[in-house]
Length: 324
Image (cartoon, rainbow, N blue to C red; front, side):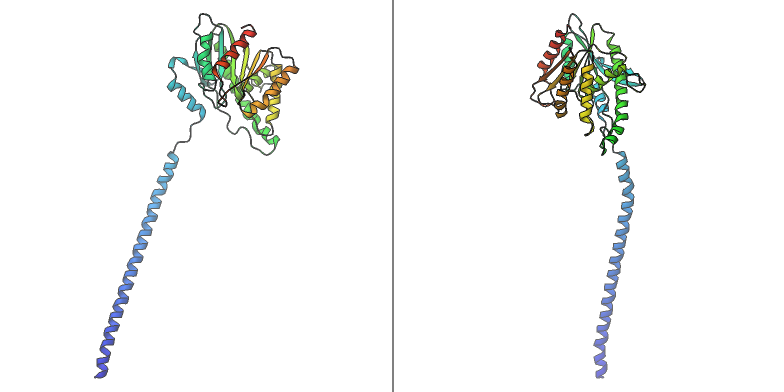
């Protein structure tokens, strides 16, 4: 009997322990199932979201290049009667035309901004576009191409830089020659002389094109018509680090050998490459005894921006000095 009384509590304790263990195992099993379900749900959600994220990336628009932006701005902000499309070979360009407002016409001033700049560039071109018609000039402002993609080359050696740069610049100058030829042919529709006011790298390329007119090679870009005079605004040749000095020395030689009158303007606070190239052109022109060459520095307060009144005064004074 005492043995039976002692075994009953033991049985009760064992039963309670078994029930507790079963309950704990059930809860752990349930928690594990929930964890598996949540993991499966997250994986399914990730698989569902991944294509959407990829689609969103594909739908995001790429940045618009400068040329397209400038063209859209001209069409939107400039009066339609002043925006003139011009066909040069297979490509169409936009130009801004503004006729003279004086009693007599002096001629046509073709305004060529630097690459990456708009036809309403506020540094100098836009002011001249509006001011010159009041002094007897019809202005035709060109919207140029963008800088060639990949130029200048960042290759390690000068030879590799030259090999990569040459085809890019050759193609760019051919396009520039086409638009300038078409613009100068259009300028012949107006009475008077034709002058070109060119800025930055495009001014340097124009000098190259005018110098290459005498070369017989078929792959050289050519201008079929030359202007009567040329004005350069902060012009220089941009190139790879090992080639830039030689490029600007070649530009200086071409400037000195040009037969047409040339006004070379730059700023006190200008691009460092402009400041470095200016003495080369003065020296070469002096050695070649170029008669109709004038170089002037204009004082400015904002780097790269020409003072309006002084700029106009320099151009008008120089034109009068050569009889125009």
